[in-house]
Picture 1: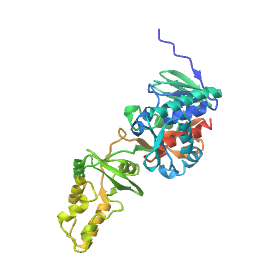
Picture 2: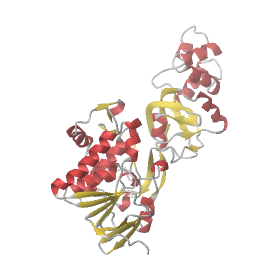
Picture 3: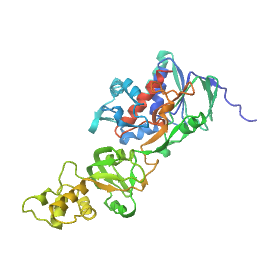
Picture 4: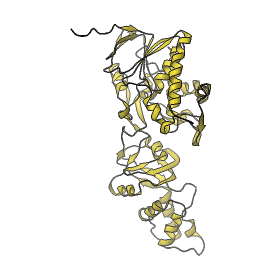
Length: 399
């Protein structure tokens, strides 16, 4: 005889996705007395949390502002970010006595391991019982399907059926599929007629081709630059890879780079590379040119630029033109490393379909989207985690 399916179970809230946003929303809703079911198709929670920040979880950024986010509507994130700020999450971290440190540009990391943040979130879920709420984890929930009938949502999976009046989608985007990332949030949005901004890889290395593929011979070379993509610019390090360009400056710029458009690099921020050649009675020849580059840049990079950004003469005008090329060197990437290497997904649920204060959809009452699934993408350095905490809190307060 076929096995009898488990009985349908009722909760106050169903949350799909046990990542950063889903866990935080579950904990906050549970502590408001709600009975929460948190479903995930993985066998364990927080897989992306554990690999973040090199395993130490860059859990927020103290300089977080709406300007650190990319969206079709740059104003959408303002409400959630204002109501739940980095200091609020830091207070929680310190309440759990998790040692942390600040790196460059306001980035906050765990001293020990990202497990500290995951364990804190799980402990916060357990605290729900103190407020009369609960958070039940349902792992390995595969073949998810959602139905809406009246004011209730019914979610079926390999683990049975659950029903609630509120459904929160925190399943993330397409980045890092090897950790289980899927396009489920977008499929669900289409099911309910909710618009989607086309997803694309963000915070992702760029690939060089054609003549520019010669740069890959410099794999491992790193230096501080200013990377320009469209109107955005970032002063951080670049790293040449065996396929193209990476490093913080490139990852940041990649979120703004558009296929077919150039990426411009200033190889010597605040430095005049060829100033020695412009000094009175200075030597002006190939050897002096290369020496001037080597004085500021890594040796292999200097040698390569001496060939690819070569001078066109030794007059003052020619040297000034060469200097400008070094501060505005154009690359023409042929693509990105894709979702497999992207730290986050840009695009997603169109913010025009959501209420900014609660993340609830405008056309389907009780349906919420939070975290990476939404068309709000942070810069590198803890901003995407802060969006997860802020958007999750906005929704939990509305449940």
